[in-house]
Every structure is written in C-alpha cells, then in structure tokens.
Length: 383
View 1 (cartoon, rainbow, N blue to C red):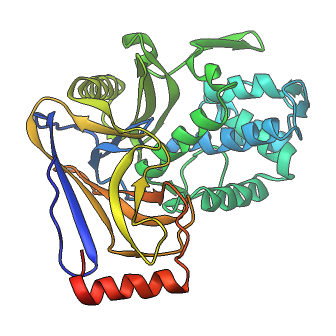
View 2 (spheres, rainbow, N blue to C red):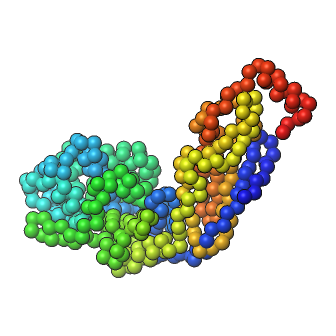
C-alpha cells in the first residue's frame, strides 16, 4: 500500500489494488438495457438506459409496489376483496386484445388473487380493479404512482394508467425499472415468491407465467415481461446465484425467442464476468490524520459499513482507493463526525464515493496547551 501527499490542505491517499478484470465486450440486440448488481447497486452494463420509453406491462411493477406498500403498512390485507367494475372488465378484458385475468363484472376478488393475476397472468383487468378500489379511479391511482415514484427517486418515469397500455405520456427508463425492482425485492421479501410462480388458474382458466428465464435459468425468480408494438418484447428479470443477485431490464426485442436469448445471455455474462469483493470492513481504519489543537495528535478515519464493490474479475488492472480530507483537522472532533471521503476509481465504471468518519472523540486543548502548540510550531515548524 502506498500513500501520496497532496498539496495544500487536502491529502490524497492512494492505494493500487489488483483484481481479475478482463471483461470481454458485451453486445445486445435490445434497444435499451441495463444490468445491475443487487447488493452493491452498481451498473455492470448499460445501453441508452436513461431514455424514457414505453414500458408496456413492465410498469405493472409500480402498480404492484403500491399494493405491497399498503399490505405492509396494514391498510390492506391479502384476504380483502375488491369488486370488478364494468370499466375494469371493458378496458382490461379479453375484448381489448390485451392480457387479462378473465374477471367478470361484479365479481369479488381477493387481493392475493389479484396480485397473482397481475404478476403471473399480467392481467390488465386485475390492475384496473386494484387501482379503482384503492384510489377510487385509475386516474387518481396513477397520480399516486407518480408521487411515489418521485419519492423513490425514479426521475425518468411518468404514469397515466395502472396497466402499461399504450399512451404517449406513459413512460419509464430501464434504469428506473431496475431501481424499482431492487426496491421491491428489498422492501417486500415476504411477497417476492409470487414472481416465480409459473402458473395460476382463475375462473377455470389456467395461464402460465410469461417470464422466459423462469424456464431456462434455474436461478431466475422474477420479475415481469412486457410487450406492445411500440415497446417490442421487453423484460425485467432477476436471478440469484449463491449470495449474488443480478437485475436486468431490456426493451425492444423483435420476438419472444430473441427476448429469451438476449436476456439469458446478458444475465449469464454478468455472473461470469463480475464478482463482489469486500474492500473494507465496517470500522476499519482507512487513514490516520493529524489534529490541530487537539488533546490527541491524530484521529483515525474509518468507514461505518462494509465496503463491497462489484468488479470485473477476468483482467488485471488498477483500482485506485483515494482518501480525501483536510490536513490538519481542527479540534474538537466528535466520534462519528464525517471528515472526508474514500473515492474508489474503477476503470470503465463511475467513481464511487464513500464517507469517512472519525473513529474517536478528540477534545480541544486548553489555553496553555494551545500556547505550547503554537510555540512548537514557531520553533520547529509544522510536522
């Protein structure tokens, strides 16, 4: 480990680390795509990932998030029943040509069955029933979706319906879909098993889950397909291998076959070419910094949580760890006070910034102590 002193008040500490990183080039036929690591949130692959595009039925994940949120806060239960309106039957039924749960006007449907109808059968009617019964109308429900999306930091999403049926104002980026999927898995683990169920029968009609990876990859377990003429064949998928989980989103494929092949190719590439590495443990000392007018001459800066990063593993390259802080630090210092940053520079990836905190309290010297320090400085100069 080598350390380099910078000029002025900022000290740059750099550590060169070698990791296996020979990542072969990845190409996909998808129009928009993103692949992220679930644990670290790092983007492993991105292609036009911020563009707002038609999400088709993938936006049903936002509808499901809204339902899960109400189940979690107790304002809704899986055994509650919703009534099917004529509007929901007409707009979301088989006559429209879209995917449907085949609900009937006036039917009472349990919330749990509606969730399965949305996630497994991709029922437009099920989405509208949920929206109307939760918010009074689908329009009001969409307004609530937009508020929640803003709160979640989904800055490239705009909703006008609960279904994903074509509308020029109904848009999401694949990046937002990946963030949304990560939030669903993190916040609602008790419901996530619903995404991997392969079939569901309702009103005597059995339908299969449309997610192709559930059938081709043993470790795939969610999330949602989408298809309209404008969106093409699209998919949000997640898979877990050992202690690693990846999430991918792809749009614009030309066929169900191409969607299946491209999705499996990108997911397999992510597991093969990348690995998670623990760079530092919570509380581990990163650097010792001099303190001015302190009863202690220095303080250790530490990270307050494990630093785990996803790195390409098939090539030797330089990973720079750079601690940035002021020197010397003025006393008093409170334990846990943020006093700098650890920058992790990964070739080909965005720089990661992690806050550094004081490991201990450092009290300020008394009057005579400060005089003594000043005298030492005048006589001997700065250390």
